[in-house]
Image 1 (cartoon, rainbow, N blue to C red):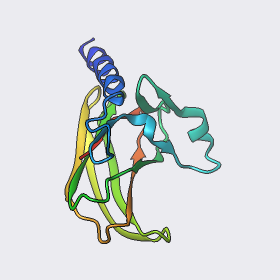
Image 2: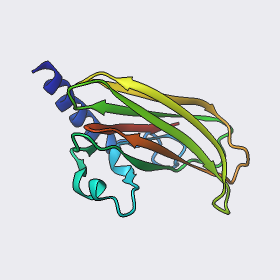
Image 3: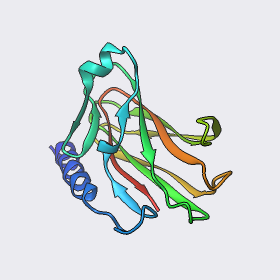
Amino acid sequence: MIKQKNLINFAVFSSAVFLMVISPLSWSQMVTNGYICAAKNPGGEDTRRFYREQDGVAINLSPNSSFPIVCPIIIDGSLSSFAVVIRLGNTGSSTQSFSCALEEYDLDFNLVKTTGKTVNVAAGQTGDLSWAPINLVRDNNYLSMRCILPPKGTVGTFVWF
């Protein structure tokens, strides 16, 4: 029961956070949720059947399939350095491994730099991955986050500042 309560609190917190923009006049600080992410698995039957966005959380409902998701990051070009944090949840019954990569692209859509991280999240719990400080190779490059969403995995809070 405690695990269910934690996940319900996580979903409610994520939904509330989605409505918060720390700096309404700029994209330099943003708090959002899993709705900003999208599943990426062209033609993948499991993705169509099991990917959902509900209660502010992007979730993989599959009992045994993983698939990639991508989350765009909109940053203020005037920032010289910033941080990104993503909160991941495990609604399954065993520990899951989450792998994410922060990817920097140039304006010709070429991958310039990637920095990957992994976190193991126990059943019914959440875990965070963070990158800081981040300095773009060129000021006009852009970022996205690519993660492998394991079975029963969720993306809740997504923050950059």
